[in-house]
Amino acid sequence: MQRVDVTISPSVLTWIMAHCNFNNLQPKIYDLLKDWVEGVKLPTYKQVEAVSKATGIPFGYFFLANPPKEDLSIIMNYRTIDSVGVIDPSRELINTLQYAESVQEWTKNHLIAENEEKLPFVGKFKNESNVVSLSKHVRKILSIEVDWWKTIKTPDAAFRYIRQKISFVGVLVLMNGVVGNNTKRILNIDEFRAFALIDDYAPLVFINSNDSYNGRIFSLLHEFVHILLGTNSFYNYVEGANYNVTREEQICNAVAAEILIPNSYFKTQWNKEKESITDIEKIITNVGKNFYCSNIVVARKALDNGYINQKDYIHIVQLIKEQYKTAKKRQKSGGDFYRTLYSRIDRRFFNMLYTSVLEGKTLYTDAFQLTHTNRNTFDHLVKEVQEVRYE
Image (cartoon, rainbow, N blue to C red; front, top):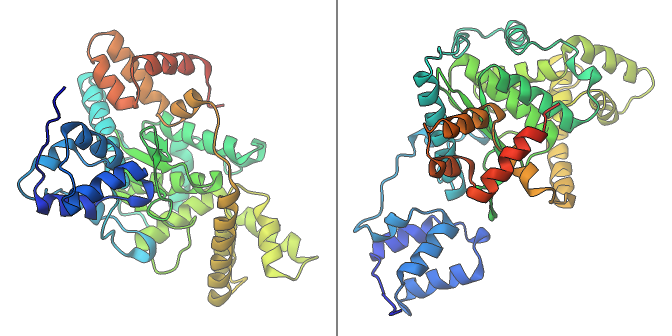
């Protein structure tokens, strides 16, 4: 077959280079881009397809006369570390957000077609700022007890329990640590830990699975509170480090912390540890072992109760952050591919999607796109649905 070269506008090529995450690119993709920029070689359609897939930049963008103007307002309006807006979101974040929006849109249209009603709790508590009151509403909506964690043995099980409860009431919960199934395109935990997209029919929470299980639980509850308040959210704190954040973020953090470690239980454990230990960091560590949350949440509880001062709190937060980074480097990846794939998808969403496919209302090709699968992996996923349980 004859080689067919194409031309990419210099300004578009400059834009593409500026929006690539070179840390995630294979050397051969980087070399192609470098050759194009330097004018050493002209690209072919096949090469453009390869670069598009590797970078997450839509294929059509490469053939525009001028750089694209993407609507990133939904990201720019979110808040990140220390309430600083996201200035230059990565393609990984953009592609993940676009995928989540497509799942949400399909679900919303499906529910409307099925004559389902709007969820009553979305935005219902937008004027509520009392943490104790909001915490009671969360427990009531999710049907969980104050001491829900006592019968759960592992952080993994605790996350699955809360996820199941939130999914059951109608909130889509997606999770992934990469873009789709591309292990080369990792979702950076320093960029985001979770986000929430508000909708009356299909509110959605996306969790970055590169976080710890305790971190995921906190993020999930934090974003659920945002749904009750009726606000989109972009979350990037280390489990509720509450300094230099907006008032709304403080409320969401405090409610998530109250669900994970109710203040009455916290005080009992703190006083018990203090009887024999004087070192504050040791007390925080020991108290944290009784709950499924980060020691940062324990430290925040200690600050709010006047057990430590602001200076000590900031010091402890920084120390725990460093410990987390060190522990993260030691973590190993792996596991069953299909179970991992299934864990990324909301169970309720998949059941609706599969039923719609069987009824001929949704094309298989659309189902594949909505689940990051092909015909073979989709069929395996169906079997996994029949075998895997959250419990």
